[in-house]
Length: 333
Image (tube, helix red, strand yellow):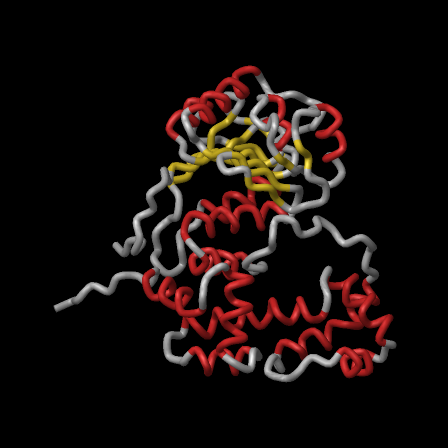
């Protein structure tokens, strides 16, 4: 059986919390991110178990009923505890759950919350004096009820070391991938992102939502252009030409692009070029100069500059990690 090439130094035991009226979406995100095996090694990244606040079979959103691995006693040996939402920001957690989380935090466990799970940590007093976030429509309530918390409004996630909180919905995906990146590095996190068909990395301070709703007609109008841009990464990006191609004025094009993608054309294209560079680097057959050319950076120096800014490592280091994370080949002789 192939194993991870680098044995993690942290406690791989990860316990996912479940509860009556479980937030199914947030729970599913965590299961998909932490409960699946790495595609290359075939080994799970975490030893995952599910612990329930209630005993026996209980209900989740969407008409689902769950039977889990055990109760709160499972938190005792966990290196990481994940709280995937909470049934209501107006319903406090049980005294037993609060005590279990306080004990886990005291012994050094890392506790992660998605969406309204921040309110559970807040009620336990674990976020006092720390930065935290939650779903954009409840951060004000978090700030009002728990004035000792430094609430960050509108961001995706906040890392305070052993306590990590995120906003709602798909921001949970970003948080989970961030945690995998923190534990295993960029290459492994990128593989998980590709499997989940999502962006490999979004900064925690990025906005939770677009400031204006995007109509179907507006989004559709830019779809052909966006697809075309993906296939011509080595071409220069001229805003005036792109606006003309989309049949818009420069000002309208920039506004529509921001509404549709949440970022500027330059930042969007940079992200696509970085993703392609990662894929090309993992092939092991191309020089850094050739990767830079194919990914649209023009020169190895430009690639290295943007790669360090976005990924925190050099292209060469990324390639080395990719090699090290390949499964061990066993001889059949």
